[in-house]
Length: 448
Image 1 (cartoon, rainbow, N blue to C red):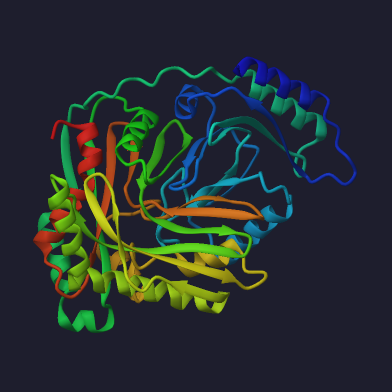
Image 2: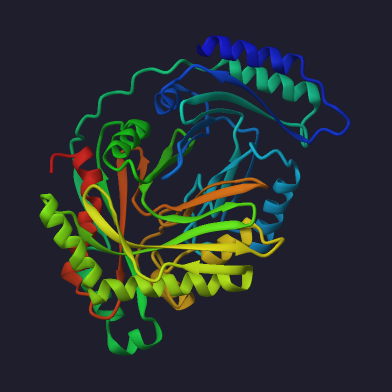
């Protein structure tokens, strides 16, 4: 059980000696009996707290504390970010060591306080589940700390670990108020501007979004909320970042930015949306309607083409599905095309994030003019909503696009949703789409 695993890891740390050819970042691990991962994380008192679960991998990670991190606030540029990223990668070639974090939607806009333009952390302690196998890991950073100090830090972090407690049962919150930004009137205005023939000529797609702010006067446990959300959409990525007690960002998102295994890259075009049916027959008919709908097909094709175009200079080969399939979630279904690439030697994650993020599924096309419109007109700061969240190391990386997401702050829950506006989009229908996208999380939080 957990106490035995902590004891064997403590013994490993105490007997560890640094060899002359050791990497400056070291990871020690022991097998542990099965533990409910998210409940274990919720019971810990150390920050930061990080949770990650892949969409189609049998893997789940809870991580706490900080062995090393890099944070970029408002004065960051991509050159500094890229240099820092390369520096981290060079500290170890151990493929099990991972930096978890994210990059904001818009690196030119102001950022959320704890989250910044980019924030990645190498955790102190991790609990990882791979299928039915569980491991407890501790990371040691000798690149910046004295040997004895770092050993003491690691031992101390194990001493304060708590056993998992059952998650608090989800209660519906009492709403003190709800507001939307942009509001309904402003939304109509923005959609009409974006669909104007003159605007569409230069910018065929802009993804407009909205923050729905729920005012509450009770505490909401982000990990209970994420666990409930996870139960409704098990085929999504699920992750959460709580860098301090003040705020937590959680997401249950269907969209992959990319997955890299050495030089092999997997990504996708996910755009075009409809609701789920009340029965199998209706569901099938709605899916077929989505596949036949020219507006949605055009939207998905724009995204596919853009991704292929930006990957071409970085790749020896790029292959994309010609025809879309339907990707189903609890309340909605999307059009989806898979894309695979073989990267050129030396292409790194930071170049991939620069090329692919933000995707046309969350920003628009062409990227620059769509982003400028969002920056100037949307009326709120997206922060990590629609940002790229995940992990990286030298060998592999995986990033998801944080579209279905929530920022939990004292007294307030911020919920985010967006819709791709192209020729033929109607403000009423797009507003309804935002409501559909929030339906799952709202049904967990409130009496609808």
